[in-house]
Image (cartoon, rainbow, N blue to C red):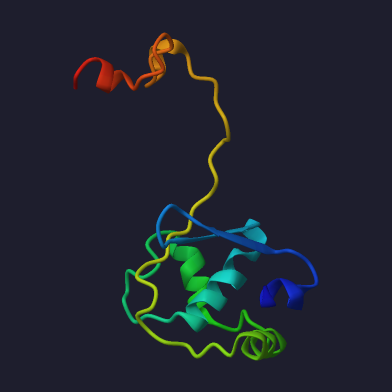
Length: 123
C-alpha cells in the first residue's frame, strides 16, 4: 500500500495463493523497483533466493533503484525492520495467455460425467 501511495497510482497488487505464498502483480516496467523493495525489507544472503530472471534480480540487487523518498515513505508507513529469513524464495514470472479453449480429447474432465478422467478410469 505504501508503495502505491508513494507512486500516486496503483503499481502493484497482491493476493495469496491457497497457502501462505504472497503473489505480487505488477507491470514489467516496475518489476525491478518492486523486487528492490522486497529485497530491501526481506533480505537474504542465499544465492538462489531469486529463483529465476537473474538479469532482473541483478538489476535489483545492484542498487540505486530505490529513491530515498520511497524508502522513507515505506519506512514511515510500515515501520518494517529488514530481517533475513522471513521469505524463503522469490520467483519472477509472467501471467499466462489467459483462458484457452480445450478440445474434448485434450480435456482432463469427462464431458459426460464431469469427473476427472483419471478418477473415471481408475488411474
